[in-house]
Length: 454
Image (cartoon, rainbow, N blue to C red; front, side):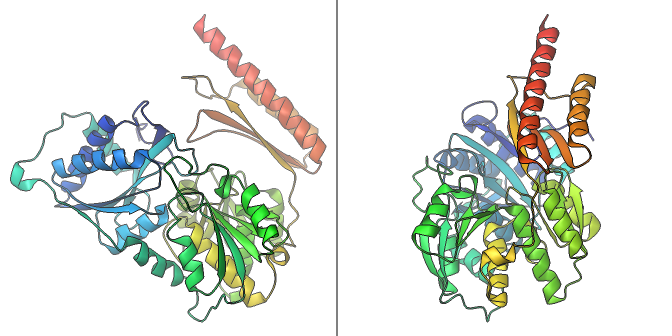
């Protein structure tokens, strides 16, 4: 299949006002999507967003483009990405559009689509939309212009869905928890889910102003919630990212549990319930210690390429019902169709309550390998392509690890970066080798660019 012109591994994303992240492009994108879906019959598309100030601008542009193509539009306002996936499915819409740059700062934004089943849009539909973008924008005749409306009870619908993902008998009374919403789209959802289940909730990151999303808080910066958990003697903390599809947690000691830890805890919970969990999907980045801990449970770890889209694809191929990434994307396929931070947190909390153990006890069987990742930033227009010299540098590091570790180089799907990861038994050696390899990769890439320019 041909390479996509606009869509990346997780939709379309970039800095606001640059490239295609402009009102003009979003108008055309909305029109193109509307035309593609209208070819299948009159359609209705829902739009949700996170709390970035630019979301209002792009919401209006997308709405105008969609109705110009004849599609009806329903606006959700600020909603977590997984909530938009859920509502797309239950409202029987033909597609859902998310306006969000997830864990990125406020000056970035992006677009991703969900299918009518609440899943990532198929490649052939993304290609069809891209082809339409390059056609002239033609407004349908006036009587066929789409209608726009707003769904006012979207948050309430999603709150009830989240609560329904665990046993109706589960009572969180007596538990004190900190919830960090990253000043993002879960600010008016997550605290209420846990409060309505009986927990005492201490809220942080719930005052979005359009510019503070993911700033010093949330799943990408855990310092604030670690301090809040310890200072308030809370039982644990739940930290979400700006669009609510990532989850990190903190135990009562202030120690962080990442997505790898959470996948292990949930796999163990499945086994305890008697579910036939024999395979779990992780990624190339999943820590070796998690793989070994899962193996001791009799569970095989399958590794996909990095990205929740790839995790979900491998889950569907293998029949696994649990998968996730260390970054906090956890997919509980027996509960929902996409990564969902709130629902994943509820599954962990249910396990904690059922076992009457603190979070620190649930992860005690995990012995992680030291892992160091360094980002090498690419110059403007530069693409990462491995060559013989880079492969030789990788082979040299692997030789120094002596078969007791891993090396991984991969380009980021959302930023102009090459991620250099080294994993092994010895922390000092891992850090040293990661630093040396990242410097070598940076130097070789610079030499390649200079050679191409000459």
